[in-house]
Image 1 (cartoon, rainbow, N blue to C red):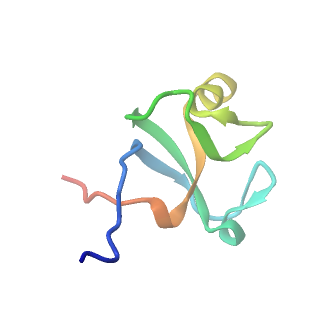
Image 2: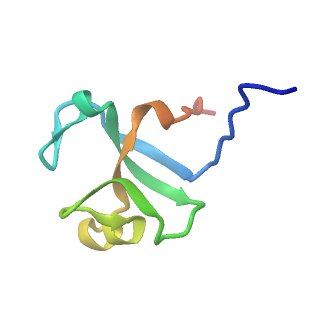
Amino acid sequence: MVTGMLRVLEIGKGKVHQVQGKWWGKSLEESGSCVVDVVDLKADRWVKLPYPSESTGTSFEDAEKKLGVMRVMWDSNKIFMLRPQ
């Protein structure tokens, strides 16, 4: 019997843009989130964002259209940091 299995799904790769302060009126520290610039999206562009807003829209595609870059708020605990090569 296997217990405690964790399924990890890679949504994409990006660069952390902001980790402190407010972003579009939401406190990053209070919500346990950060702002990420998505560089390589592996999911579909229409996938719903975990923190949608009027400013960023509800999907990765909306965020890119509204901001000019695919910049989204993301749960800090759901980010896997890669070491620079």
